[in-house]
Image (cartoon, one colour):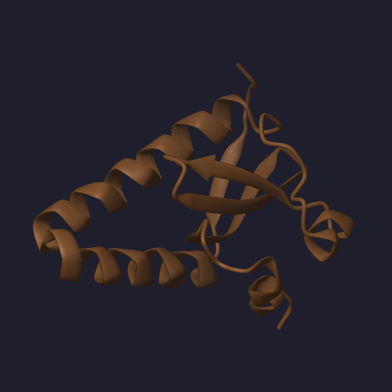
Length: 108
């Protein structure tokens, strides 16, 4: 286990995760969507604090060039993050179905 690794969620990542929960609540109900959201946060915080380099660099070239890694969660969501200076910086959580060109929002 890596020592002293901190996981930091950007405001954009928190908003994107909230959007996922809102979308899910329309299909599976608010309680299950909130539960999913909390499980994802717990998984990411625990997994990435222990294994920050476990995910490969993102396939999308623009993300790759900037050192972003993409971790797939439950084959449905991609957690986009960078690992630098003993800190995991979560930049976004998006559906795995999205076109990689839509990742441009991360650069604004």
